[in-house]
Every structure is written in structure tokens, then in C-alpha cells.
Length: 253
Image (cartoon, rainbow, N blue to C red; front, side, top):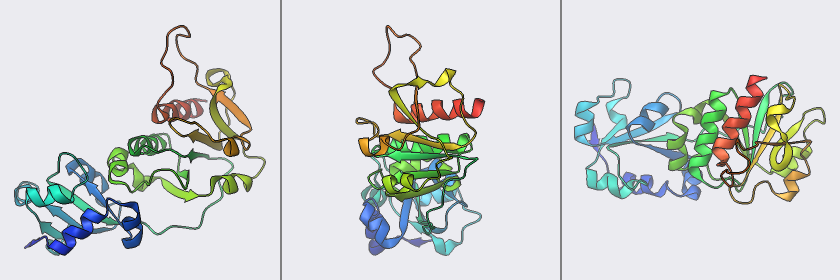
């Protein structure tokens, strides 16, 4: 039979909204029914917290009773990072960081330079998963993928894409010269008219500042996504949307 959530465990879960606490404990939280369903079986589960009503309507057939804890809606509201608290959340172990792998010559990899919005990061991870990109290298100032909002936005894709945080300048300096490094900038070549390689690195930049100057010097191919109507168009594309457009073009060649 499921136990009641203790104050100590509730306090721990609440603290996981902070990046430093996630790193300290090696844990992160997935909130909401869809997010929990999408991540169960992908990450190593510590335990599930839910209301009694939720458990009665949605029994967990593959989870031991000892890994399920019951909490009131008020308690979940206090420990949740969402404005509308969910009826269920799950606490997972952050996967052990592997040694930073070198990019593969014949595969596409993404590099994120200072992406700050959790929703944008989640969208990028989903796009990478959809288009078969297996690795994303993030600058150290990119938002934490294990931020609850990032995890929710990935819709379960975080467990299918390898995500690494590193010094991007140093990383790109070590890349083999035979691997093309692409970036989208306003003064780049029309992506719809350019030959694109099967493998390479694609850099996507910060929502407001774009790609930093120190990272731009590594770029060997400049691309741009031209607007459909040059006389009337939005100021720019959201970085998550832009990433999906770019990846779709690489996969269509």
C-alpha cells in the first residue's frame, strides 16, 4: 500500500526546482500526467507522488507500492513548479554524465549557444528526436535540460537524445576540420538553395543575441532561412521553430 508523502521528502522535491539542488542530489522532477507517462521507463525512477484520487483512477501496474507516495492537492501545490499544480509527478535520477564524445563525421549534431528559455530547449530536443539527431552539445550558460519546464516541453524526447554541457568554444576548437560547421545568420546563404551535407554540426544561438562572436569564428557555412514575403514578415523566428526548419532541410536532401 502506498505511503503518505513525508515533510522531508516534500521539502526535497520542492528544492529540485533549483539547478544547484538538482546537481547536488542527482535528481529531477517530471510533472503532470502526460509528462510522467512520457518519461516512465526512460529514466531511472526514484518514486511517484500523486493524489489518492489519481491513484485510484490510474493505478501504476509497473511500479512497486513502496515507490508511490500519496499527497494532498495542497501539498502538491507547495512542491510543484507549475502555476496549476498537477495530480501526479515523478522524481527521477539524472543520468550519469558520460565523457564528452567527439561528433561523428557522418551524423548531424546540434550545438546550442546560450539558449535561455526552457520551452525553447524542450522544443529543440523534440525536433532533434523527430529528425534523428542523437547528440546536442550545450554551452554552460544554456538552460538546464532537467529544469521541470524543459522536461515537460520535451514530451519524453529528453531520454532519446544525448545532451552534454561543455565549453563550446573549446569543444568546437577540437572538431576535425573535415566536419562542416553550420550556423543560421541573417547574412547567410539561402538554406533552400544550398547543398547540405549528411553530417556536420549545426549551431543555434541565444533567443535575443544570436550566436556569440567567439562561437561565430568556428562557423564554416553560413545559412539563412528567408521569409516567404520579403515585404511583410516577422522580425525573426523562434529558435525552436528555426531549429526544426533547419533540420527538416538537412533531412530532405
